[in-house]
Image (cartoon, rainbow, N blue to C red; front, side, top):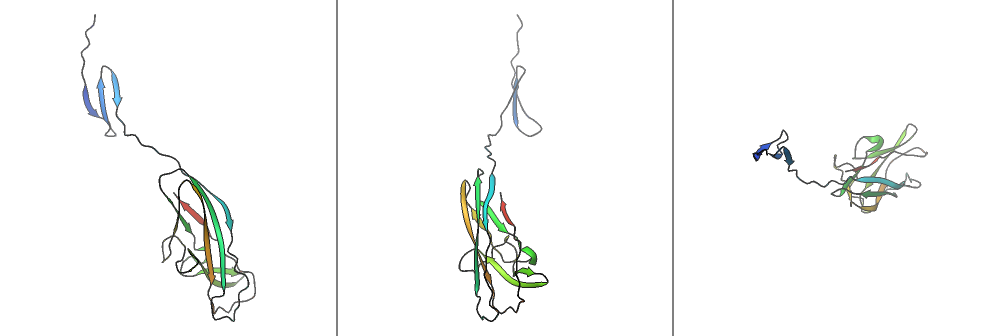
Length: 164
């Protein structure tokens, strides 16, 4: 009968994980990490419709309200939602265009229209949605007064980005 010598050697593998070897067996002690993949979908978008702009008004007279509905499942934390700057490439004042004509406007995080919704740069702020939920976020728009613009249909394209 063969007499096996029992030995236990403590070592670290190339990934600095503790390994125990003995009798030809390798036991690796691994940290247990739970990782759930986050899945998000934008299930609906409603454009902010500003209606007809009055060039003679001295007050901001066109407030539009749009919305985006985001369904996120999984993941470990709340998710950041940003809006792009559109054609203007800045958040100070976004720009809608009609042919060669332009009109300034902006998008805000609340009905008070005092915090610009963007990507967190250039004085803008972002919004959060809860993980494992369907959330509808309102987008509050406003066209400032005092713009002498040509008659036309003005538009801009804004990307909604969910960061996870």
